[in-house]
Image: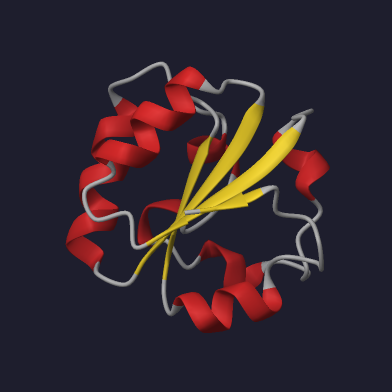
Length: 108
């Protein structure tokens, strides 16, 4: 299980980022070569499959709906994938405040 579940308050709610100093300092999540983002991950099939293939990349996923967030959190709890961080909220707002300019390698 990813260490994020134990160290980030409100992780399962997906709005934990509201309690953080923004934009995020990604080094706290480990050493990754790239940072990528999927907007609207649904139930997380593409996000999890891609993260499993690209272990050197830290993936964030933004989902507007709580049901998708709940599904991906459950899947992450039961997997060995530790490079995915789900977020719940409006993608436009999250993109404006969470990520510094030019930090994202890919956006899906």
